[in-house]
Structure formats: structure tokens, C-alpha cells
Image 1: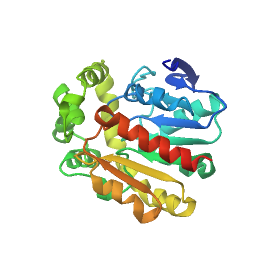
Image 2: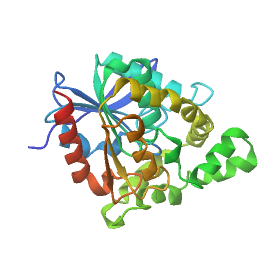
Image 3: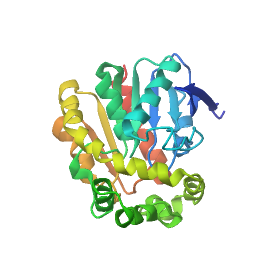
Length: 289
């Protein structure tokens, strides 16, 4: 029987936050944090694969998916602000301790949650969710950092190019050993949301804030060393946004980290759902005891 996945909305700090939820509420919670430019839609297949054993929650960040999309004049689009909303949702749902799966933008949000209350985080699964400068693949990031350092028409234009259908499709198929495994529905869905009036300004604001995540890395790495939090890095080795060196770097601060590279790209769930699910279930089954 197909597990029931609920699609719900909660009000957090006056904003509607959409989230997917499945599994018994008294089971260990697994929080799924999506990346750019997608939403909790990226977890549509993973949630049913985990919810027989875990209470799974996957929110859409503000400005993404089905959550509220206030203008940058009405909401500060920073990773600190997105974390505040995520923390508010967990509080609203009565979630205490949780494991988390982080990918892309979900990683800096997850790291902030861990730094605020390290004891709450029971385990981490990172799928192309970076915490080390080694993970940045050039030249993809050159334009982001140039724009953040000196916002203006010349530096903004390349970033607007990153919001096009061609760029969104590239994120899904680049580095995937067999691109025919990746459904075109992904980039069509994401692009429709990116193309909403006003969304480009939201994404540009987050691009400008991205260096704040890099500034946080020394604290994050110290958190890893101090907490020895159980961590599984399962990584698309062909990702030209966050490369495999970013996965390997976790072993520097967490010698017991479990690191697996798969022949995929940035959104590895789309081509390697079964493999990644097996790694997650094995890992969480051992560390959440």
C-alpha cells in the first residue's frame, strides 16, 4: 500500500509555509531541506521510501514552491531569515530532536539550525550540501561571488542567466551518467515557479547573501569536531556546482563520516533514488537507536 503523504500549510511569523509530512508523529523525525531552484517537490519519492520508519517533514522555503513569496521589501531574503522560518515551523509542529537531509541551499539552513542548538540534531545526511570551500566548483561560483561583492548591472546579468530554463535543466542533467533517468517534469516545474513575477529579485537577494554561508564554515566545521554528529555524505560525483571534494572534506572534521559518491549530478535523487534510499535507511537505522 502506498504510504499517505500529507500536503499542509502552517502560519509561521505571519507567513504561509507549505510542507509535506508523512509517518507516525511519535517516530524519529527526519527533516528534509531542499535546494535551489526547487522545493519539497524534490523529495516526492524519498518521503514514501522513509516514512514507514520515520516521521518525515519537508518544507518549502519562503520564496520557493508553495510557500509564501513576499517581496524583498517585505521579507529579508537571507539564509538567517529562512532559518528563522524553518525553526518556527519545527516549533509550531512540536518537533524537538531531528535528523536532517540537506541539499544545496538546505545545507546552510541546516547548519544554522545545528549551531543554534547542537543537541537537537541527531544525525545528518548531506547530498551535495556543502560545508567546505573545497566543494566549490569554478567557474560556476565566480559569478555569484562577483555579484555579491559588487552588485550592479554588469555582475547581475550573468546571474539572471542562471534563472533561465536552460540553466535549470543543466542543473538536473549535468554530470548524470544516464540523463534519460531524469524526468523533464523537474525543470519544467521549477522554472514555472522561478518565472513568477518578482521571484527573480528574491533569488538575486539570496545570491547576494550567499558569502555569509562561507563565512559560517569555520563555526560549522568546529561544530562537527565538537559534536561528532553522525554524518552520511551521499554525493553526485559529477556535480559541477558542489564537487566531490566537498563530500570528502567532511572526513577531515568527522573521521567517522560515511561518504559515498554516485554517478550522478546535483540532484542525485532523480537518477539514484534507490541507491541513496538504501544508504539513508542503513545509516539512520544504525545511528538513531
